[in-house]
Image 1 (spheres, one colour):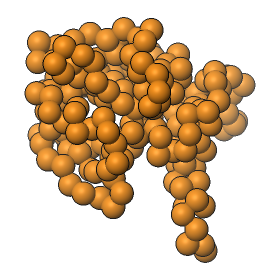
Image 2 (cartoon, one colour):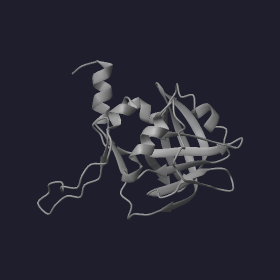
Image 3 (tube, rainbow, N blue to C red):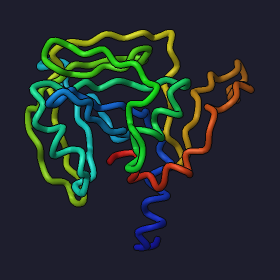
Image 4 (tube, rainbow, N blue to C red):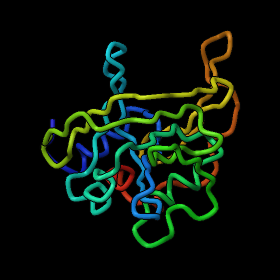
Length: 186
């Protein structure tokens, strides 16, 4: 066992998880970030949780929104996952989002889209645990979600009858250019 933080970060990336666009329209401008720490919490009431880097400069602005859109990125959105995690680019360039009447931004073509209201925010070490109540949602199970695994974006590959992964290619692009796994939650 090691107490090396770099090794711990790497170990955390070995658990595959989806990538979400978290966004809202605030004062006439889109505000958003990419999150890979997402979990469904409850069906009754409908709740989900996100973990967001406590040092995020985007979350303090985004947290002021009446509602927030959480969109599950698909394999075709690998470029957007990197872009939403970037601090130096227009995070929304080239992407199409639908705006709800309450200001949430939902990605066009996402595997699932949730319009949410913040229930509570709890400190969790160097991250914030954000509990969101789902107000409305839509899902398209025919769209394959984008996966964040081992510090790279990957595609979901169905298993063959023998139990091995199929030869389906991984999502395009190398996520290592986007930075560490922490960058996917800024």
